[in-house]
Amino acid sequence: MELAAAKLKFIEAWGKLGSEWGINRTMAQVHALLLISPEALTTEEIMEALSISRGNANMTLRDLIGWGLIEKQHKAGERKEYFFADKDVWNISRQVAKERKKRELEPVLKVLNELSTVTGDEKDPEFKTFKKSVSDINKLALNVDKTLETMLKAEESWFWGSVLKVFK
Image (tube, rainbow, N blue to C red; front, top):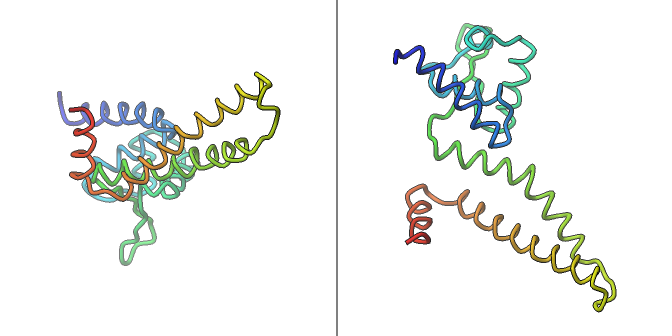
């Protein structure tokens, strides 16, 4: 496979993977392009490489910056903005986990915490089932939260070593 074809295949695959991670396909494709680019790219270069509109490129770049997956830089004497991605996969996975925790898990934990204060007749089967389900889901979500916090604070070698111990 030629390099150009391999790059396109990687961008497509990363786009599909990004969709699974809660990032839209175009966002993931722009991120993939920046991951495999040795130099920072301009908006125009990104638009041309991925055949996307300026509006889509600008919105996507803004979202990627918001997720903390890319950064913007300026070159002396130029008016154009350049964008680059951290190439460290561990940093990328921690950043995605951090954002998903903030956007998805924390709001759910807040709701589950509110729901755990519901009062009712302990003998009522409906109430008992509701209370147990909410409690069990809350415990699971809190464990996921603790695991993510550990991942976010951990060094890569320590984290994977700890995970592998669990499966031995």
